[in-house]
Image (cartoon, rainbow, N blue to C red; front, top):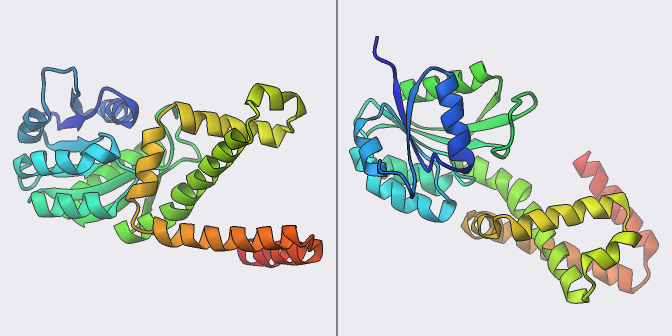
Length: 257
């Protein structure tokens, strides 16, 4: 029997390389296309049973427009980005193939699937969705099914708000004019941990975090809420209203936990 074939566009780095390893371990014949490969994205789209778009967020729309029409009906077109509304809509409008939106909720360094989840969004067709669900579950990942809109709403908190808070912390510390090595002897363990996250965001792939903030359609609403809350907290702190601050945190805790 002929092996099922998969083509990973952007498969030489990051989550694309992770996906390459996963599908090979599941027995698929995997080919990759990247900036330095002779094989192109168009080559893979025309010949593979499963085509995965695993390029940076900013490049995803253009790649989908280019390869989507070349993925044949009955085959699968899937993306791996942190946003789902736009990529899934583009895949549906530019291809007649099965469509699945996919977002692994972890980074490419993860090797043990225990405790890690993969979000899948149905786009078109049952076969492609069933295939990818089976691949991830067989590998040991938990599969969360949701809609692209709900995914992006959840990610506006889990990613956009979270990363925004990290960026604000880092920029405020930088504006204070105190380098971290000077702060470090005075740092608590939790502050050190937060500053390590700042270091990762600011020095590894800052463009990724900028794309997540700018690209999520729900970012504007959640950041407006952040600004309102920050203003209220500052007003109470300026007024030395410790009782009011305490009540506000206790009320929020009732909602959260």
